[in-house]
Image (cartoon, rainbow, N blue to C red):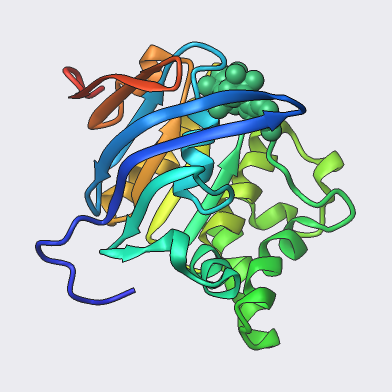
Length: 237
Ligand SMILES: Nc1ncnc2c1ncn2[C@@H]1O[C@H](COP(=O)(O)OP(=O)(O)OP(=O)(O)O)[C@@H](O)[C@H]1O
Ligand SMILES: [Mg+2]
């Protein structure tokens, strides 16, 4: 990514549609979505089940590809990049956090956080030290050698956030990151995300909770694969 960050849109979708083929039938998950996310934004995405929130997030995160339309990242058309280049962008610039944590079950907390740094080609000593530091900064310094099954949900999500931060991403894509957590644990995760946003990390977060969405600075709502509303959040808790 370039350092020329002034006037350029960061994430930009133009008339993006996504259809899934199911035998003879085509399921329209997204229809003509146009959307800009400026650098540094904290955007929440809400909408009924099946309205296309995860599909939108996965396309923005380069985990899935649009059927039609354009996706520009800092002015570069992502859909035209070779697969290796897209993988490199995902690895170096994007972090992902999911509702079900998606940790590797056979790896310890610290090993889970090290994985993206292996892909990024970081030196062994550096990545071990950085993984420990990240986990420590998220209050997990005493759980480095625990397996995911030996951690609570909130603790697993902290490990997932540490893993998302491993390569110092510009954007975190979070799909219902507090969906499986009790309120107090969820608040702690939101505090962490908010702190990251204050340090300049762009956040796009899908949520079903209005109180969670109220903490973002922008609320995008979806219906039937389309953007239903898009506005600066009225309240910021
Ligand atoms: N791999 C797939 N194959 C076929 N259809 C899919 C696929 N993934 C999603 N869909 C369909 O696309 C639509 C949007 O799905 P998506 O997962 O984006 O919804 P969502 O808003 O995230 O819902 P939820 O709140 O339940 O997570 C749904 O109708 C879904 O059934
Ligand atoms: Mg979803």
